[in-house]
Length: 196
Image 1 (cartoon, rainbow, N blue to C red):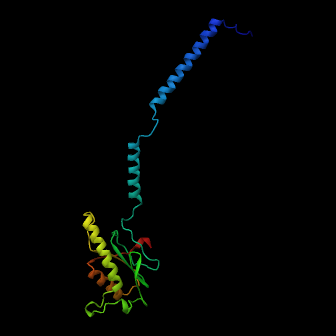
Image 2 (cartoon, rainbow, N blue to C red; image 1 turned 180 degrees about the horizontal axis):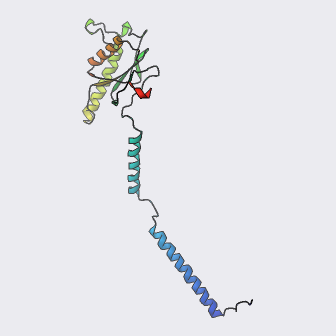
Image 3 (cartoon, one colour; image 1 turned 180 degrees about the vertical axis):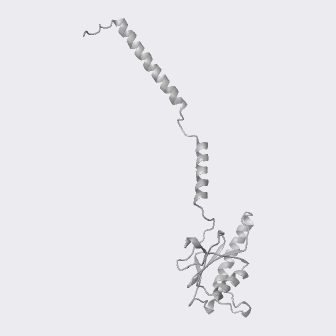
């Protein structure tokens, strides 16, 4: 085979110009394609996306709006109810303590209230003093919140988390003390039957 004939200066110049034009056209085409692409994220669209994801996650993972903490030695009774707990003042009755929220207010002696925690007034023999003092503070706090925020009214509700072995007499003392502090609506927290 024979080699191609060498290009003249004019032909070589023309070939170089053609290559340059092709390279220039390729570069312009790439720039046009890149211009149609989004180079940065729009902050408004990104905030919308994050809000939707947040709402989805809150709806997916929130089983209840109430934050109820139970003591380790409490075994609430089992029920088949489907009612969800509300966020209220929570009183926990264990075999050893009475707690408001997660704070111990009365230490029980053999499952009953000690004499020094009982009211001296025979008209209020069921009043539990330590529980009474703590519930007064909780009710006052709820009243202040209700005064400042109409969306959070004071509902006079109490959530009772009691061990299933708590004597009825002790439960009655706690409910009497709560009633004396304007907490007249009681909710007993139980385990759902299929959760046990």
